[in-house]
Image (cartoon, rainbow, N blue to C red):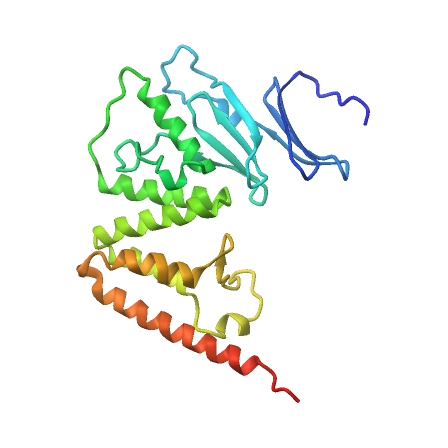
Length: 274
């Protein structure tokens, strides 16, 4: 391939095993190409990420330096700023998703997200970098715990691990989130979680016609079976608080009914030998 003329120098370059090339120019333009098919997949400006807030009083007010631009493990562009805020570009929604930041200083998990079980995960490393960066600031102090921020932080981390397609981190974030809700006896949100992992009654998902406004329920998330997560992780975590015992019993019974029905359906699908 001949030399590619970009109009300004390249400051970050990355590639993956699928012949995709990522490049960020000095002018703050990000490109992603499919070299095998010789097509441009993405042409995006980083202006919305590097422009500082108007109320910023730092000497560099107006712009924020980019310190890293590469492909994430999920294959999407990942940009990290000098503030250690990290952004993932969603190729389906065509927008940036902020997946690591310092927006939840009062969260119980703000400084303890480097759990040993997810220390090697991409999201965990990004969040640990945020914590280290904040700890170096002379004026930084740990804010008193606030339940609302802790819940919002866990919900954000859960969504971020899903965007990064990181199953181990998603499972750990899910477990932390459910444990927090159980400790708070937040029955409405626990019910919402359980219903999303239980899904519709057996056979209903398959019989429902295709509808863009009502997509079919997927029994898997990041390759993990939702019913297995419900039985082995979610329900045991809920059992830690007797105040939500009724909810626990309800979904244990429902899950048993669903699994019994599924087993019966699988048996009926086995054709008799002739």
